[in-house]
Structure formats: structure tokens, C-alpha cells
Image 1: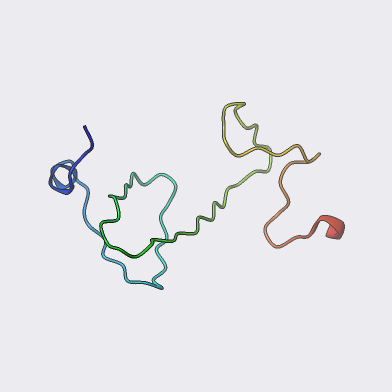
Image 2 (image 1 turned 60 degrees about the vertical axis):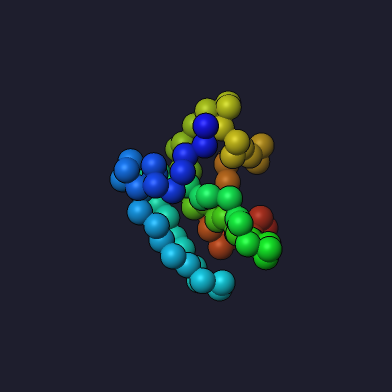
Length: 82
């Protein structure tokens, strides 16, 4: 069964109210969840994952992969700039 908001609070989760246009940043190590949208309005999200990749070997089952020689580009660097 899915977790209810009440059960989530019993497990230590706390609500984080956010309005349209708010920016919410979460550390990747923070356990978090989202409940179904019960409003008639669509809920849009944008996820940006920032990771340290220098010298990192990604597990083959990890969803985030690159076949670029040398790994991912540093943040803010274009392919021809290296």
C-alpha cells in the first residue's frame, strides 16, 4: 500500500509547503517523497542533478551514464572549450 501523509510524518517526514514558482533544493542524500497531485492543475517539476564525476566509476545499472571519453563535461563548459 502507498504511504499516507500521516504515516509519512510518523516516519519522520515533514511537509515542505511550496507555491508555484518556488525553488526547492534537496541534497541527493535526503530521503524525500511526493504525494499524488489532487488538484485540477498540472504539476511541473525540473530536476537538475549536480554530481562530482572526476575519477568516478558509474555502476552499470545507474540511470545516469555517459559514453563521452573523459566522462561528463564540467558544469558550464561546452564540448569545444576543453
